[in-house]
Length: 506
Image 1 (cartoon, rainbow, N blue to C red):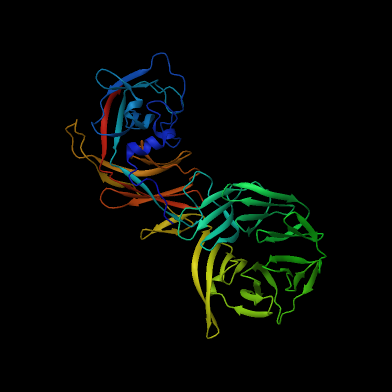
Image 2: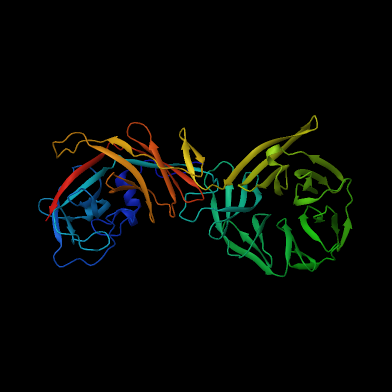
């Protein structure tokens, strides 16, 4: 899945959009992975002061203090705009209170200040997600589990996920970016489509949610909700004690035909009730009339289709099979699923065409697949796949031939060597940078070999693993994982890095 960071996320422009991390100037909260970490604190009465002139290029500035051995002891500026520094008569001014990143005074001796300007031509773009097609370009937590999915429109699925809390994602077949809809109900939930709305079913509560306005249209509490379904006008709730049919303002209680009812499907002119063993009834007024079919099979789920057609997800020989039932004619048609979809546990259907949505769960993966029934040929069902998204468990990831693969022991990435431009203010050879990527609580950062952070690659929180590799002459591919998704970023234009000296402290 592709995602977008502005394609010209130039160093200066990127930092303007990430004010929390790159507009701190010379004094502010810095990344904990840097040995010279510095949290904002009171300055001593006599801070050390230096004046420096960075290379005359547009970009952002990182500045550090180093000891005589070249070890970074303090970060004074991290991807800061030039305007964030104090201006002196002959350059920019930075101050240092003589302490290290933990606020402890450093031993006496000579200390040096060095910095890097990241030119505005450096471009950072988000490219793809791996192992989680339900992750989006938002700051909210990424889904860790897919619990349910229903067909919302012909080209759109509503997917119930768990991030840090339940959330519904509207996922379009043609658009990469899911649209999140917050959910306030606690506990385990099921999801059904209800006309233009969504029906959220909990164990002791139910609510109708408008995904466009994110408003709760209607809600009710009860005891032991087994299932429910709605066509937008009529809603049947299968409570433990008895089924309840809601039709506008009318509320009708139905005599349950069996104590172990598990599924309900509201069709065009009737309602289907079913047990897990495969017994079926249709609702006729206030009565439930047995609906006999040849060769009944255990049920996994039931969905309402077009007119008075019901789709039954049945279990046969340990695998799922789709059964289409026309209630009026009692015609039954068994449709075989493709081999990779025979682990389906949930089914949803369109009410005006033979379009299905399946949820398939295995130990390592949850997959949502949309199918259109075409025809049966030579005793085989012909399906057209129109939707396929998955979330996969992984403990770690590695790179094999440039591809992201799940691995248990990913190892470490070697530094990427970049030959950068000369500082136009210094008579020096072409600068060489050895770049890697580190993560902190604010996201991922491109860092130099001395651990000085240069620019922020991503703002994703909770990153547990990063890897990177060279991409062309002056580019890098960066991969970061929070354990729920792996993100890929491209960094280009890295020849536009300019190292400079900024004086010394005694």
